[in-house]
Length: 134
Image 1 (cartoon, one colour):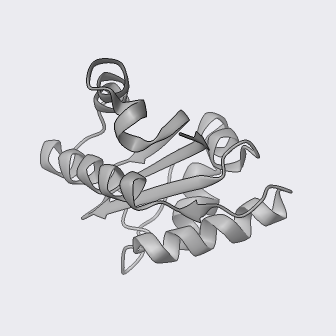
Image 2: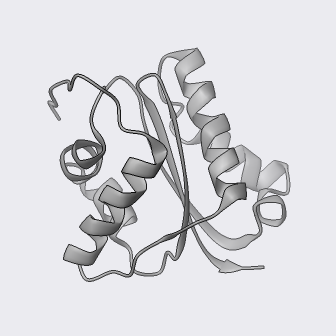
């Protein structure tokens, strides 16, 4: 996937707005912000910015499997989209980058999700999707 660079990076609130517009176009309901998911997503984005790469979702999977992540985040089903290295405005993050890759697009469009948290650090993004609040 080849994606250009924008002059500024989208913020979590801008990404949420762009994501909800996109989801509505795809026939999915709007997502509700969750503070626990937002904090976790921000921690993940901070980490990705530190390692200057993605981790293949290893940190996400380890947190869920080995650190009681489902209980700590408060949901029974969770998913993650991550990226590193693209400075993009919110609409381009959603409609160019994540929509340009079928697994990421399927995840961000999935109607089962009803909550989200989003983290941004430099050119790193993390979107954590959830459903079935505990």
